[in-house]
Length: 115
Image (cartoon, rainbow, N blue to C red; front, side, top):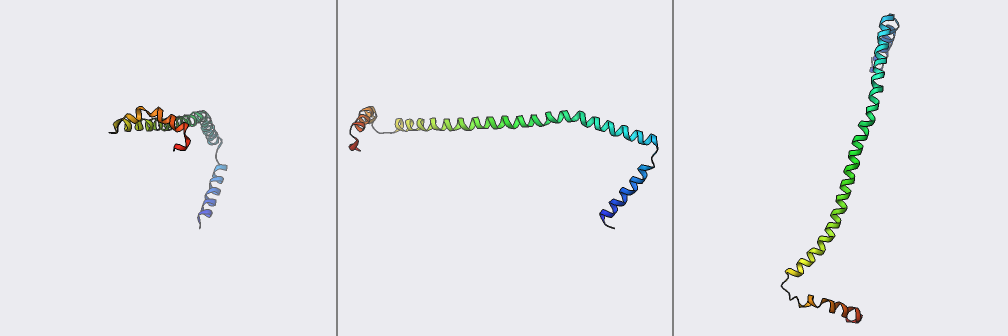
């Protein structure tokens, strides 16, 4: 006997026994069924809350991580220019070139063949 034959035999036996149940037992079974259905109906309203709270948490996490991600890129851009300025100040080169930097920039704009 395989599993499907066994399950069919059990189902037939249970169906025959259910047909022979008295009225009082059938009434109690029906009341238990109705009570279980009402309980699941009451709990289904909470399932909406159980769904939205985690979804809200995920949305907030995505929002915060994207804000920090974009802020980190902005801070990286700012810090790159700051590093260049620190390198200029920390170098042992003469600052004369940097004092006259406007003149050299003007010279480059005037004479494009100078480069």
